[in-house]
Amino acid sequence: MKFSLVALALLLSLSIPAYAGEDEAKAAEEAKEAELEEKAAENLPGEVSSPLRGINMKGVFQAQQPVDAKAAVIGWFKNEKQSYMVKPDNDEVRAKLLQFNGKTIMVFAKERNRGKYLIVMGIVEEPDGTTPKRKKKGF
Image: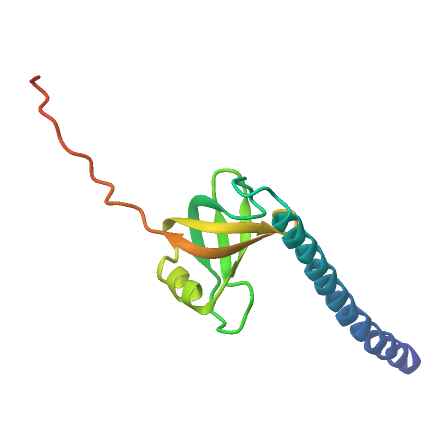
């Protein structure tokens, strides 16, 4: 019995560093993939609207709780087609995004890692959504 507990402890202690190494390898692979997508976006013709270069998207932003000031991923963005993990382009965008937690917004963003991440470069300010009322009885 004592031997099996020692063997189990030894096995677990050897597997934990291997698991941590898998996370680092996955992060390095994602970074390489994002770099290749950046290069592909640079090679697109000037007027092309592409998710690699940046497009306007409308959806709901949900911040992860609790908000970590140093985390790369700060929440999720869901539109009618799919859901993305959100990485802000800079600290100013990070602060603005957190103000819209749980609300429908329009962002200017780039897709990265085959649609896994959304790099938000800005928030598109929408005009006032009110429409003028017209008379129901005619002219």
